[in-house]
Image (tube, rainbow, N blue to C red; front, side, top):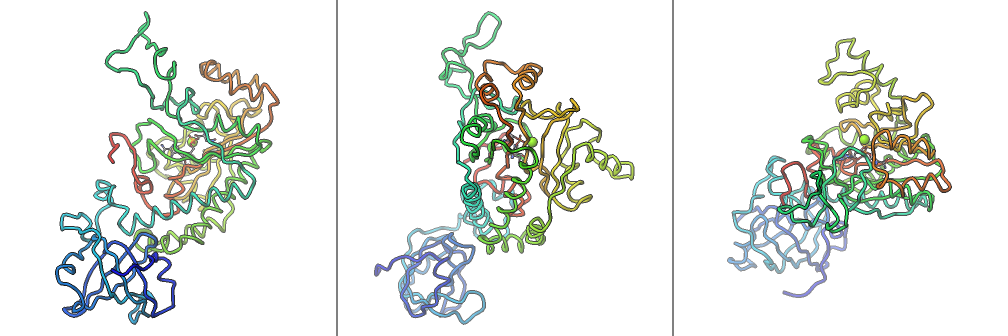
Length: 467
Ligand code: 4AD
Ligand code: MG
């Protein structure tokens, strides 16, 4: 075959220099036609759109043509021509075709319309479907948007460790990291495992959050963000929980809770706008195929300002709903850790726009949050979103050394794990705030996918670590 520089399909479909000789490489989506002429829909992953390759059968070897089946990988040299049919403006009149990789009829993606459950079982191949191609292109674009947003605002991307000896959220949901022989654990006279000979000389785990180290950086560099994987061994089999998920955690010196809410709102709106501006073809595809209200919902979020409401007020609204006969699965009372149904009621039924709930009871929030004067609540903020529930969790941090120490002791958090964190309050303490955005929860919102397992390439959930 003649060597012609490859053009990506996304670029090719924009070209109008008809008559030019071009090369494309990609995977066959469909092939149809008559005894004289065939039409191959070819996709190379650069865009949701296929390029149509027109093949006059008489010009090609019969054995080669037989190998052009769904899923096969081919290289095509041909002339860029103006398309006569509807759809794309440009197509290729094939001159030479080389089959790079054949694909027999055991290929599981022969026909369209597989269930999402089935596609999860073949997660190694599902990026080749239109749906997952769209989702993973959007995932990439959202990652770029996040870096752009913070970089443009002078935040520094700070890398926090994945292996840690402290439990940031204090929820005991950590995966242990060890090189010890589990069949031969050394224990002391109380039956406790001796970690002296373990790799780190102490018990270590995968991090649930980079926040504590992020605070060290914010109180030095001013404004930072983290963006990396986090791990939670919570046994939650829901459409919104993963055992391994990515989190973005900005942390800013001198920001109070109101600045923190402004930042969260600006940040989410920037990401949503970015998706509409940079991934429109993919978003439109998902809108048309799965979720007819998607684009409207994305545009809706951009227009509205988020409701800002204390937890106590939120509980009153939920209690009124119960009094009026609304049925929740879980009870509502002051002090309860809200369930997703409660959050969604506030957002979808009561206010009909995103809600930032603030000032939660201290018992249901982490030790590091700034304590309010009332002695009962802390300066927490959760951003609640339509169809998702909690998308962001954050707070102003307790800057007072004594108050923080007292809370750490009340919760029996071992000091040997926390001395370095307390040093931020000992040496030049300052007011500061931050939050964590669950990357996959953002992607659920932007793609309209119903299950969090479908917005990460290889989901890790209880009893599942396939691929
Ligand atoms: O509310 P969380 O637990 O807050 C923190 O970890 C804080 N340290 C963040 C901070 O202030 N820097 O988690 C933050 C967000 C949640 O709002 C949710 O979007 C997401 O992380 N998240 C999960 N996403 C997927 N699967 C899970 N199991 C998640 N747990 C939390
Ligand atoms: Mg939370």
